[in-house]
Length: 298
Image (tube, rainbow, N blue to C red):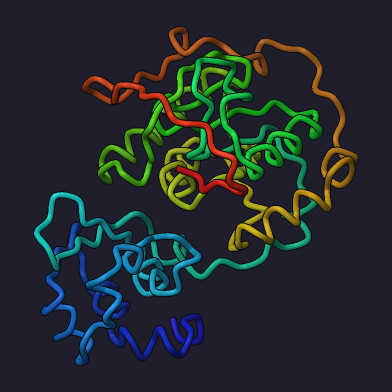
């Protein structure tokens, strides 16, 4: 896939994308020494000093090396200086993010999926009020003004109706194993199907981090849904600007209210066909309220 990688990234990890494209197995567990043998040069010092070097975020330029081959990285349960490349899609699925086309940007979604954030208030309350950050406040305002059904994506609770009362918790989707993330995505897709009926031909607009998109992409595509990502590849500052520019206009102005029908009304999680992955969920823990701006999606 020439031309997609930045020059400095290509020079730092030459040949790794091609190596992963040639592998049929998954996961591909490699030591840092093996990666250096593949690339023919030492890894950057940050690969050993900073776990963020191996982040799968689209904002991490190095992640393009493995994402373009259809892989994500995990270090969970591995010894020091080892990483596992786990296949999460086809190379075309994981290619370099591109701005949405005019057609994609003008598509009116059937529902909006809003990612949670790490900063939460310290007591049980409706999910729409629990998350305390500038980013979530803007996502919520945008979703409410869209006049479309919207749901919150929670790493612990899965798909959450905005008015459902939940307890604070401390869990990030990125901290789960690849199998657990896949199970989370399937659980959310099943719950969406129970709430909305058939997802065939539905457009779901997602406002959440890359790990949520990766977990949901395959289960939703299997059900015929189209995932729209208007903020794909934008930094946090650009996302906040995007929401501010659309406050009271844009998407909301193009949408019409959705008439009541059983297919677009929320149902309780216990009545949905989806069940949480096997094993007890992590126990919710109170999170101290923070006044910091932004807030990264967990």
